[in-house]
Length: 178
Ligand code: IMP
Image 1 (cartoon, protein in one colour):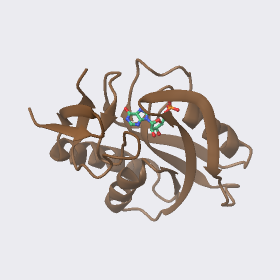
Image 2: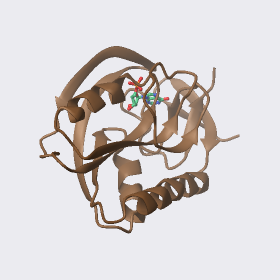
Image 3: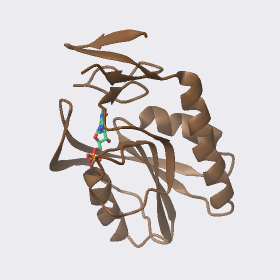
Image 4: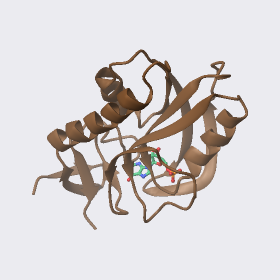
């Protein structure tokens, strides 16, 4: 099993770049099917979703746009309920179809905050696309419309996901060795 060290923690290979590609294509296929003629706006959550959003957008074949928002909720390997908005939504979303693009939904708090903010802007519809979903950690009841991979409640790095700012550049996904 390939292992990597990110700062003081050791991680082992968990999801290969080939499996990642298949999962991203699955999400893109569903979006291409569901948003034909709707010119959706992808709203990607920085920092973690930048690689997923970039791969996803290049697999979307219908006309679409992209914008970015930025929140911070994680401290080390723990999600916190203290969510700070660092870059907000500045687009006019009235009447638009919005697809929120997130790297991972863990407790679901970050996404809930964004869903509340977006709702105030009266979009025509909002869907959530996340690359990884941790159902055991999820504390909310809204639906996640497009899920790349469902994973256990382990801390992971790679493919845009970080530990303390590092590990985002790993092309495969690694999980923490406990
Ligand atoms: P939530 O608000 O608890 O759902 O956390 C969402 C955010 O926490 C994600 O956008 C990630 O930035 C971060 N996060 C959650 N789980 C992990 C993980 O396993 N590795 C790295 N970051 C994570």
